[in-house]
Image (tube, rainbow, N blue to C red; front, side):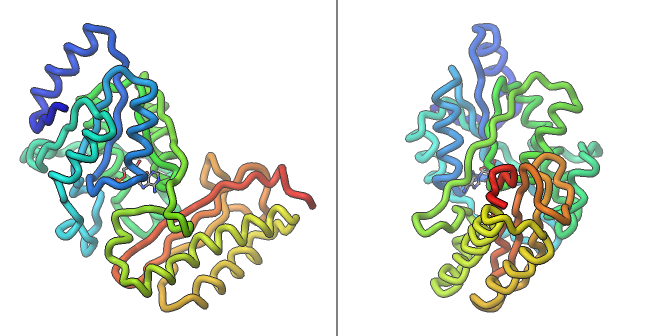
Length: 286
Ligand code: AMP
């Protein structure tokens, strides 16, 4: 496995690959590699000639007061995990390489970034789209893999690629969960054992809403109020949002209809946890 830290070196490598007509798959990560990341790498490994992963804790997507400084950075373990998944090349630049002094350009997707996490993390999605745009320009992937766990991010990146007419196929892979249902996240590491148990209320509430919708209960205000009650009953937390929205446009709904996303963000202890599931109200038995 190649480990490349410089943009110029990776660009050279990519030039060779493109000349050889290799299909390039790309998995961008912030490291602290876990099963969720590995699932994206496996998907890429299965359909690409060259699999490139990036490990970069992107400063511009953290808001003031967030966990940028203490975000886990176990580089050696991460490299071993990438190698075990058959990654061909890992790109792990430092912050100055990606944002040299004088950087003044931001890539911004409007609308889709207004609600959900965008409303609670000002500037976060501009940071995400800017770094992903830079990475796409360097790596020039044919296919890039993202997780459904970050559903709003996935929708925003799809839109950016469509709007900027990049010839990149975006593949969204299912959320990988612990056996008890908790969505795997690097931020689960900040939870105490008690908070870890409490955090199960998030997936339980999502599943509760799904069952209710499938039983024909379609009033969003009722469903989200019941989810809120369930999550708050599990222990001390601060709920940023619980929403049921259109799965494509991320627009809030009063009544569940068609393909919807049930999405939430909840702070428990030092962790801000997000999770979501999709439900197709077309399949409900009303
Ligand atoms: P991150 O390192 O948190 O920026 O995540 C890198 C990629 O892994 C993103 O596309 C995430 O959506 C994806 N990812 C993170 N956690 C999971 C998970 N539990 N299941 C599937 N994909 C995930």
